[in-house]
Amino acid sequence: MASKRIAVTGSSGFLGSAVVRLLHSKDITVIPISRKNGFDICNPETLKNIEPFDVLIHLAAHTFVPDSYNRTAEFFTININGTLNALELCKKHKAKMIFASSYVYGPPSYLPVDEQHPVNMWNPYASSKIICEQLCHVYHREFEVPVDILRIFNIYGPGQNESFLIPKVIKGVFEGQLNLETLAPKRDFVHVDDVADAFLKCAENNTSGYATYNIGSGASYSVQQIIDKTEHITQRKANITCSEKRRANEVLDVVADYSKIKHEKHWQPHITLEQGLKGMIEVYKQKNYI
Image 1 (cartoon, rainbow, N blue to C red):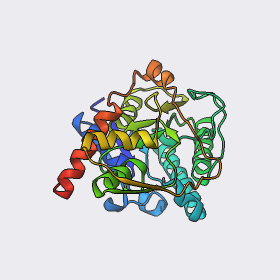
Image 2: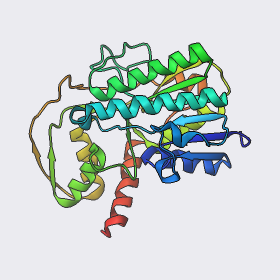
Image 3: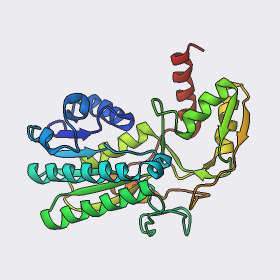
Image 4: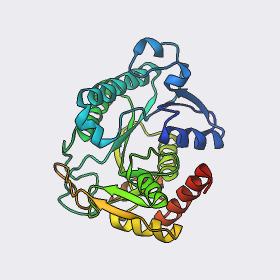
């Protein structure tokens, strides 16, 4: 594995930083593809001189679902064109593509959700990811690009943007005020370090096929439960206000069935929600000198 060269798009982002950190810890050669390094995955002209690699982990994308309603064209442009250019690089270098997809199932017909569940273009962000998955399938079928697709459920961890639920809750509990939409929906939260490990497991595997894997914890927690756990750990209380605004096609509960990747790649999550929350709270306290 140490002899492999792995390119990572979005290498300086939230998930990308965790993936690169893990790869470096394994003495793996990393080719970071990010604007900080002069590479724009949406601009092929900037990608011409990228060194050859064996695996490309494609993480660069717009990801915040609410923004996908307000900046829809931008989401489709960035996510689809970036994936096309990543696939072209894999085709050029005869490399494997590991694509970071998302929860693409919409309101589930059954729980836990496995990879056989029908996909659903239930919001613009999920729609862009489904189209990207289809592009991956085309490049596998027509050009024999090996592809692993990781459908990541609700990722969280230190360094995540405070627009996302868990960082927002932690900040709100410390400030004593939380303004949310609703407390009822339940989600399957998986820690960023566990997700990074899933990418490593797929990169270690030399399969030449096309496969899709769910990445989750196998448990779901409501917004209220996240607040309760955060208040318990911090020994603080927040005043909570809810607009009770519901998104279109709101999903009320989600649980991932990750048995496929556990069986085929020997991956499973190791960081519990409580452990993950404690780690994020410690980082928040250090950052804000609390």
